Image (tube, rainbow, N blue to C red; front, side):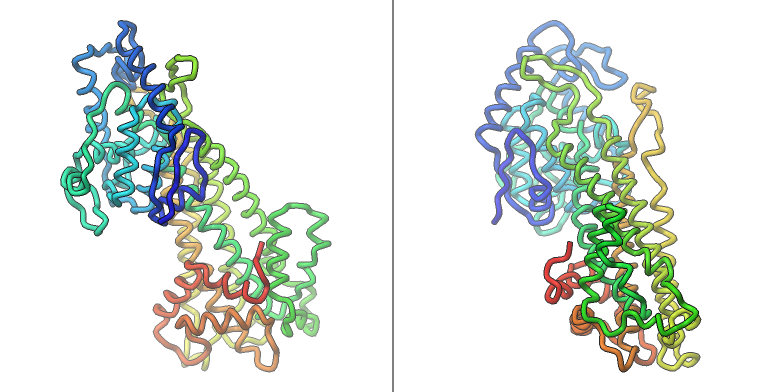
Length: 512
């Protein structure tokens, strides 16, 4: 099994995906263990002094004015975890929780948190045992860290609360730790706070969304090309020289992908035989511009994610010169913004895909295709309601595109009076990504059927590869009405698993 070694300088997005989705093992580097021990010495020295230090010898948030005596500090750290594990609602997905825990471990290993090495090792042990704390949908405002989600994870380290075992069964965390020979941690000064105070949940979801969207944007280039082909559109608008004069890199990449898919097509360009049509509709002609803008948004989001992966987010932090300083680095604004940006871009990509699908189904705009791509229009409804489903998904994505980060709600007796709502931005982006997959799958379903209905014209080799692959995947071609839901589900799986892109790349080579 693949192993990810956590050091002091952060981790990569591929490390997060390997642990969250691939079940990779986690190890602490010798450098990280040494840094943990050195920072802990600083915290222990401060704890022995009479001067109050936030998180070490004081209460938290609006209660930070109270000095906590030494005999109560272990109880203080236990109490912050128990009281903050206040999430509600549905359970969060296993991959999100694993990313959350791994990213918190990454910050702990930076040597800036003051956590003992044995606590970090227990975090790694829980991940390696396949134990996943039960984390709930609601409880984070994206400021002072993803507090409730991280608290539920810390509760598991203490042997309290519920967790899911490697067999998928939810049981008391203490029982699961015992079965795997893991001793519950007994938290000391600052450790409870250090386990809760980060942007780890929203960052983990950002990294996974970027991985999914990378495949989906390539998939959208493919389905846009298939729709252009089915509509007898022109590929001349994809010429590199047209995109060089507006040098957005994402736009050029999308146009290049579409052009590669359409190479050798016998369908493109026939719109010139249709005198009233001088040029293709925006949803066809501007596909690279819309998809390209989304790609460039993703590039910015990756930059933010990489910076956050290299960060040590905690409050207070232990500095190399021995100071322990309060700060505001836990504020989720940088991550929250790009999560919202991605939801906006995804909604627009879904919207333009739906417009192309609708055009394929409308006999007045499809340039010779049967109404709704039906076998016997009137007796058959064809793909009429598949487009309804797609439209409903697009409408939902527009609602999900409303930015969470534009909101704030004060908490902690006005001490935490401006929050990022980054966790909420991440949760809705996950739904948007799921919906975008379904939207692209419906365009694929319609476009492949439409291409097959263009009798006497030869599609591009890449298009033919897609049609053959999707038919082998159980997605039916033209014919009388049938139960559509299974076909759409199969198309969704085909896109979701990356098989659409893989089918094209057998002909085109790697897409951009």
